[in-house]
Image (cartoon, rainbow over all chains, first blue to last red):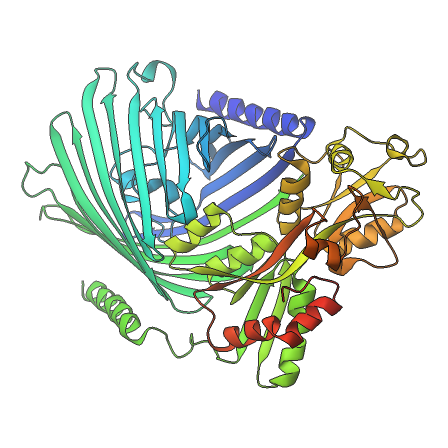
Length: 329
Length: 278
């Protein structure tokens, strides 16, 4: 089944590529690759391709553009083709000026989920955004969104209606109830960002109630950048809550020091179920092009510990080479 | 466990030190060095004024690079340049990204420029209307015969999307439409000027500072691009040229920008074929 799925995705990619070349407009190809080494005592000692985004951006006109993105990753599952897994990550069309709101766009397709920090998470540390890690919401989903900027760069907003099942489910696994999302980000003065997101849906085929919200903040002054996020979700009566704080210190143009602390409680009615994540690391920017880093070495140490003393804490060491390039056809 | 505690303590110590000391000694930027990056239109102004400024202030070390307005603005947001040169204003998306990262872009207009429409010197066409120019660039007109010239295919030369000149051209001429397929998308004003000078039948657009005897500027809506027609507003394809800094210019950044805005700096702007703002 997975083999068939992979060929299906590759065929889609080829069709999109050929049609992009045939159709008038501007086509940009991008690759984002993460080569990773992970060491976890008695558990993991592996080299892998953690992410291999192959992205096609097609600009049909100044008002209409599209994005198609496959994610290739190394996999040792028997069902995957030749040691590689493939996921469809983005497939959407943006329409500007379709509705008369300045600096806004309507998006249709498999699109970004504008919740908490998940949609602009730049992987300063290698761990996922909290709302992704603690399964609040999938990073992309099928649906429609309206996204726009507040004038003078003072923030952004988004509202969306999606399937609510994320990008990994389709067909019979998607229920008939849509999910609704609202997001606001406000930057009153340079360096201070505040905002929040709300998301609600009927979950799964038995359509249980699910809602989540996030409050985010960011302080960026000189070489110091601190990001905060508070998250809460109610899943069929069970409330989970947590927060994250992530300080980043720019040492030089080539080095930055990163740290992250997460505190997560999956069920606030339960005792002894809290867990904490501590990440420390360094990012080394080896090469910049077009005003941004294009080759980067990341080294992270991660410690996950549990309130439940019967569970052992986990220590992980991860090193990753991250590189990207792009070209226009 | 001990290692973990040491690591966490180390990280916290580093962060605390940063908060109070603000910059590590090795990260501290030398006060006499500056980097300017961005628009290839603004590049000649940035280069010549920086050279003259360094002649007057030998202790200053100024590095000037091109790349396009988008690249310069991205570098300012990334914190890897002191001044972003741009031939278009910053976009809302860029402003938002900058403000999020604690960068406060302040705009200074350093000159004005006309976008000259140029053809090969042997081309018999001397003038176009804005409407004809648009039709050529979107592919509705593809032969010089249709605009009063001799029969021959029009070779359309444009700038790439990182270019501020392209953004302004798109806004003032194309008005939302896209450049025709098969157009040559080049990375700099100089590349456009050189290509047009060597390709009979071609048409391109460049900043006034890149005009030379090797190309012929066309009248647009019966107005030739010049300092005078740009200042008077008669020539419609005109725009300001910007330098963006993080916050109000200070130190060496301020000294350089003050110099560019001074009588001497604006004379250099004029000598280079651009339009002074004073």
